Length: 195
Image 1: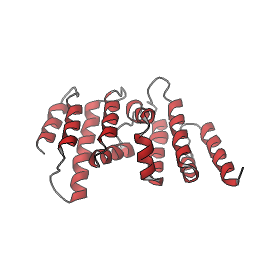
Image 2 (image 1 turned 120 degrees about the vertical axis):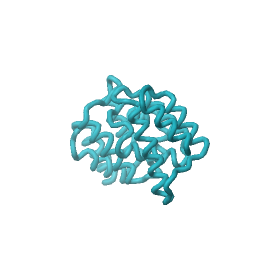
Image 3 (image 1 turned 135 degrees about the vertical axis):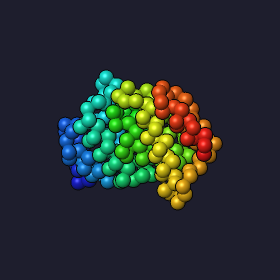
């Protein structure tokens, strides 16, 4: 076993033994990703899964560490690898979007917006389906954050005042908007149809 392997297993052990709110955990995940990105991803999925035995991650501090900080750190380490591994992992999509109280906020919201705008609609559709089943918050409010983010990000990236979405993007968003119960449904439906 070489020094790199020793460091890798030392980090895995530290992460496994750390409290889910340990401030050092995100840094350990980033170090592990630099050595073996795929393993860091698998350990992340495992660690998140440990704290969602009832199907929910409702502890704000746990979500802040294991969702927001680790999500952002792994995404920053390699956006290409992150996108590929995340989109191929239904369990991780469920953990983040269906179980976490931080679903559709921070880095995971930005990531979802970028999936929609880059036409990775299968993964975005799955994330939104999971979000709809998340019992830790209001689906209408989360969809509003997604739609607002998609439109404002599009305008900012393209230097325009009015967003334009293709038919597939609009249809996917409308399909999820139709499942909202409450005031956001009509407002969001109108915003998408006006594009």
